[in-house]
Image: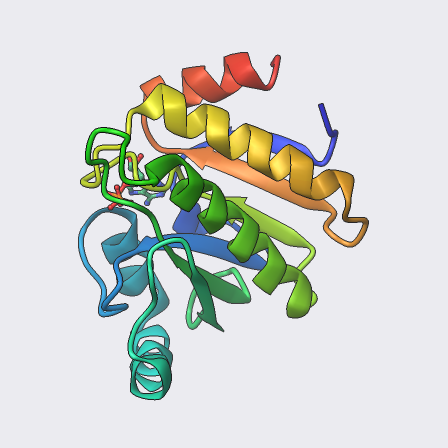
Amino acid sequence: MDKRVTLQQGDITKLQVDAIVNAANSSLMGGGGVDGAIHRAGGKEILNECIKIVNRQGGCKTGEAVITTGGNLPAKYVIHTVGPVWGGGNRKEEQLLANCYINSLKIAVNNNAQTIAFPNISTGVYRFPKDKAAAIAVKTVHEYLQNNATISEVIFICFDDENYNLYKALLGL
Ligand code: ADP
């Protein structure tokens, strides 16, 4: 296991890192869950930048990622990625979820963000099975870090006990 990968439980909006990742939806216009929490805590500057992105490229596709300011958050940037809605597993959900992690890490690197925190993408309203999602997240991040020396820390921040315990086991903590 890469020592740069760490685990926390709590609220992602409190983290003082270079970038936090948002489990957004393709409209980029905010929503419930972690998305709502990030926009509430970060203020209107985040939404204003999302609107500019929408005007430029028309939202964000599933598996892709865009970056905005962190606004009033302690984090410098918010990376908005759109996780797949779980539809039973035959709609490329697993690859699309992996793409969320890869594309978020790529955009972090391109913006010199060295510390980055991920929520448990797709495991809320999008109903991705938590055990499968955790396994994909851990594997994908580890593989990415094997070929990357610029990222110094990746935090998995879990909100609920079930996710926290799954990550704890997968990370051998
Ligand atoms: P999705 O639509 O991708 O499923 P949700 O926001 O519904 O997104 O859920 C994604 C995960 O984010 C869930 O595991 C949920 O428990 C978690 N979550 C909700 N609020 C926060 C928060 N403030 N900080 C970190 N994680 C959160």
